[in-house]
Length: 341
Image (cartoon, rainbow, N blue to C red; front, side, top):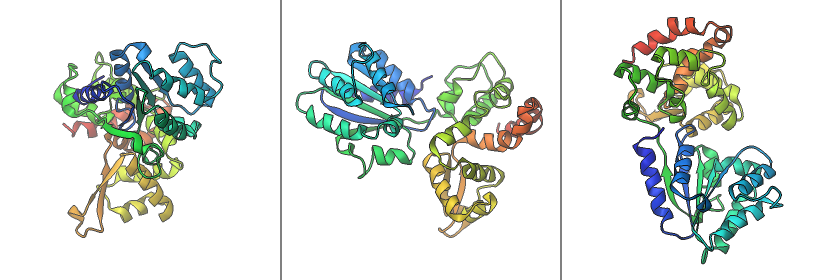
């Protein structure tokens, strides 16, 4: 599922790749925004022997070694260490131009903390005669700052380009060509947050109401537990994050102390989890404004899927798990969604 932003990012990456020199770039954006789609499209534009794709995951080092072996069409056991596997990719670029895509780079570093050191050494070793274009992909949560960006990063000096992938706009959703009214498309945009990874689950053969119930209000629905899965991936104390997001869903643009009081958390825990949620772009703040003095800020949901989920799914999980999701949607969620149009 693509949009103009995706295509512009792909074209820009290809322009950098065509320079045929040692280079490193970063593709970043929130979860489900389409980074993996971009990786696949880049693979489609290049012949298989000129691109290596590695998906970082929370698994042991041998899993990543085997992934590189498969990409290079080599038998299992060809490399004893991840360093050997990475070095082979860079060595291949002496004779031909290579693109090396590492998807979810922060997850790879969680598994193999030595990777930034290895990449730095390889970029330095091959900088005069290699032609490896390294493309690192990750979210824009705080962990990206330490491992790719900023003074604490070991590889920041080798990164020359940063490509941001944005969620769909409402016009992008309209351009998908689905046979829905504009009011229905507004609802779909709201409940998915404009994320391609969520929109891809929409079945155009069903009504908008049927889609929303199928995805959010059935225990087996793909998006019924998606916010919790994402929080568990990126945040240490999910219970505290739930308290903040649930409180925010009940309030109208509260300022800091209002939200802290409503979440019933200690100030230190609240501050830490708020920073996490701001980094993940789930919530945002507007300094000053309607609250008067600049020490105040209005807090609000940036990701409207999370807003929808904490308003209507999270408080009613017991009923949804007991098969009453359709009733919850018809009586509580649908009337609120109808006001969006």
